[in-house]
Image 1 (tube, rainbow over the protein chains, first blue to last red):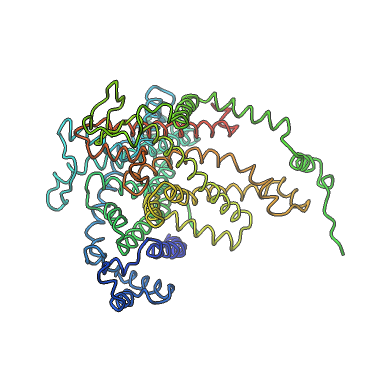
Image 2: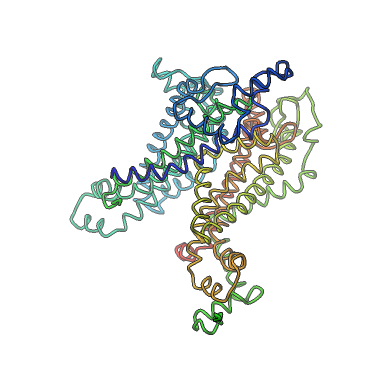
Length: 316
Length: 313
């Protein structure tokens, strides 16, 4: 297993390097000169000041050297300084990443809690009313845009019923109850689409497994139906489900961008939008890189998780 | 020493039949029958007629937007009737500038559907080009192209679309390019996987044995045979593209005011949610129905194009 993990990490390296090149290239793609933006029109009109700023930022050197310098600093944890608030980007990431992670974990948990029982019941009673209704709901869940669902929830629960706060964030360390109360609508907004995808996956893979010979054997032995499903069928049907969860991490990060913007949650998603709108290059570079690392790491964890779930899988 | 190219008859009866069929010009009668059967199967799948009806309705709305609008979507402004709910005068109410929501949504459908179709087209063409080249040529080309697509795939789609749109500048055309680029890895992977299988099939080997050039093999033999999963994915991708466009417009980097689009209308409605929720709810309903219809259509196409699933249904 250790060898497999090492091999898998090594396979990730070229993709990670390519992703870092894309993140670095953002500075050349975004309109405007970073030195000009930092100095403002007044100061930038002074040629000497402008050239000095470009030299300070390293923009006067060849692009490959700039990239290697940026990569070296990034590996050491120095992601530069925000052009907007003049604070270290690493600090900004450290402050905001836990908020986004909390949101995505809550959304994932919620999706799992909804998807697992509904998927199991649908698979155990295929083509029943429950199955048809839950399949239709899954189609609906996939088609509902995050931002619209968020707006509907705000209108129904915050504006009309006034049972939940419309937006805002209370840190977990400050007040657990208030934190969860304020994260409820964002987590539902982000997690509902995922729950629909997961539900369909649980249903189809469980249906597949229930047709296997060892299930018939277990039933023939006189094992209770609950045990057959929970002990024999469910575990083996989880491999495709885990794959789907792994693949959806990117979707969740993307969804977090818009969910955080709607609910005014101070995570890296909202920070990314603000930074893009205000052309804060170092932040855009750092956030995109952090998100790419997050997605690639999720893929790695997914691959490794296979072996734990299904002992039949052996890696060489 | 000269190497003689094998003729169709040298390849044995089964292969020569394949070659004859593959190399004959025009669409043969059996092929026409297959297409007809596919359409019939598609129309028989449970939700496809509903999906097609919705899409046809929205397409007609987009084409005849000037005829079905009740007021000018941009220039008609009436502050006296701003933020009003639905009425006989304004079917879907008015926004904060007193503009007619129905007229703006009708024109918005043009932008949303157009952006969806063009961006999927961009992603599909470029993705297929990359995927088919990687799958057919293999080796270093494959490794290089796939590592690049893997790297693009590592970024969340919306983050990438946001960065590209900001880089190229805000607006409709750049949104289409950005959404198209975001879709490339998906179509590339799908096309590569199908090409890997198709390049080993008898008809490809036969074409190669007959001396067909690589571009000809790709265009005439590989591409038509890998199109089914790509068509299905493109249909599903249209829904995703429409949501991404609406997301970009909602966040302020897509379609720019005063041009109407569904995402922009939602953003406007969201800002005045307490005063007039209808302006925020209706555009969402339209986006939702369109995405749902494309998903149903994709599902129907999957069933219709896969004979095993069609028999099952």
